[in-house]
Length: 76
Length: 354
Image (tube, rainbow over all chains, first blue to last red; front, side):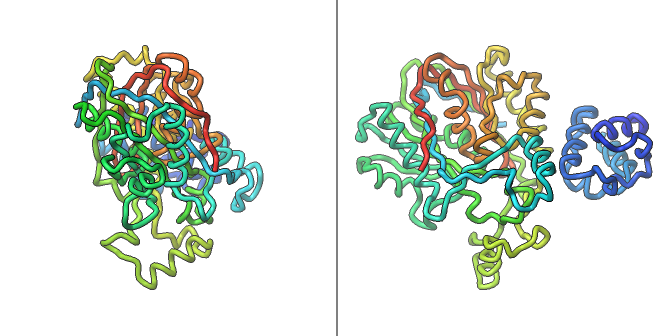
């Protein structure tokens, strides 16, 4: 699993946020556009792109994009 | 995984009844602007919901649905051998809702009454039980009632659940029919995630006491903030469960019983919200034209949502043609239940209101 590819898929779930805002260390819940629907979109993206099921706690326990990436990676 | 095959049983009719009282999502008080409300409505696909006033219960809604269905079927009351009721909002702690309706419908004394306590997968689960009871031919005719009034103990400040849930009662007529095409079922449970749809107060593990009665009254009156709520639907867990398990269950059912998904007319999914339905359809490579939605005008009507969608969206097709139907309920448990059944010119009166 590649973090850059993950970040690209991650960014695709947002409509208004600048692409340059998405970095491994980005605290995604602090982005203005982040909301409960984006959280669902992220769960759907991980299911679709990686065939991995993540749950609410995986999102809650992630601060940065890299945190979520590592959680998904560990479920591979 | 649990599979079931039920022979010599057919669905003869489906009806529904909703409360007259309507709540428009665009007017909900917690949105800061109409734009914000519109964004939510677009994502969930729900514009309005029918909400019962204080005097209306799930049994009233189902009674009305049953009366019109029995009348349009032309069934003699004495020919009904089984009355089943699936709800999480019974009239009383004792006696069960099926008896309440049995009395009001004036059914015969040797009609069997049975209740099912279940959430969103409830209609499919109850149908599997009722169909199984009918299949040996001793019980010839059964009515399955299904409905909830979930908003009665809902927090009006809950931004997550209030725009979603509506209320409805439904009735389904099931008959012993020698030579009918089989009905197939697949269901299962993921109980370790049951907490995602869980309400602990008021059962026998944690009975009401002075403190929880006060909390419940405060909740209904809108004096409890979202942060203070004890019952919280974990929508992320429910979503993750639904988009993963519902497509898998439907695919397993089709594989086990050699059902060609391309020949299916209607794939009626539990009406959770539009975003979940679109995600399930995408994972099954099916076009949304085969996935009817009653969400726009009725919202998520819990276990009544599948039969309600048959009535509201498929009325014309059901009453005049032969239809191949796949259904899937998912949620409470957490659990899921899928079914395949065919219908031909069934009785399907227009949705009633009380």
